[in-house]
Length: 302
Image (cartoon, rainbow, N blue to C red; front, top):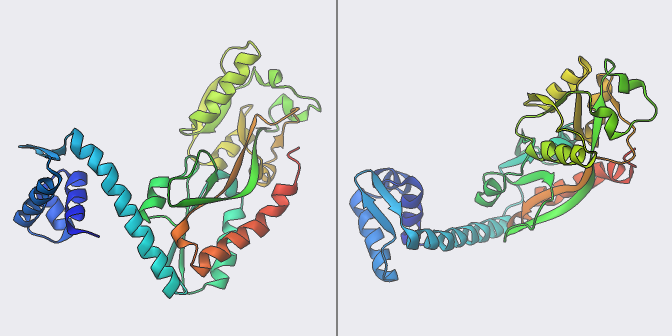
């Protein structure tokens, strides 16, 4: 990539000439000269220079958006060329959302590693939002999560399953034994949700509001789905979670309440860089995920 752009991006992100020069392997005077040359070519200053460092001005912020787009395209092009010439990736980094954490992600990477034993596969759990910036930068290769919104340029998606958000109760909750349950029946009981899961809290609040009930009492938050289920198993609290975690819930004696419909549903699947699709390991990953998710896709939520 153009050296002027590399210097600009580094200074913009670091806010400091010394840190930027260390990152890109140039002397501080050379970085200063490069930035001045770029500003001269553009006919505009890009930074406000202060004793505390260099900070983008309005023009610089607009140019940053263009520069990052160029950086992404360069990265995508380089990966595309590498995919054409290499048969294996040295490292494959995967982020899996909660719908894939009841053993699905583990089965997936085990099968993938059997086919590509020379590739180091790193699997990380991310319970909520897809880490799209990491995918764009190349820090992550595959994201398994909700297909919400249009993918950015250079990113493609592949649907795998419809995830339904349902309600689980443990043996200590009276609803555990009921054959007919409505959402109104859940009002007296507290809820435990995943930490930072604002979407579920908002959805529950709206659902209770439709019933003309006060907001749900969300008295507990946990950092893992297993912890949420363990708390429900040992209290009268309820939790809302995607139906693929049902095996984990059943192991703890939890029951999915027989509501008339899920709290809500969403499509879930693969996020991947289009430039990486030439790698055989990426192609095989999608094939394995399709095979594993077909039974879940065909199963009725109830």
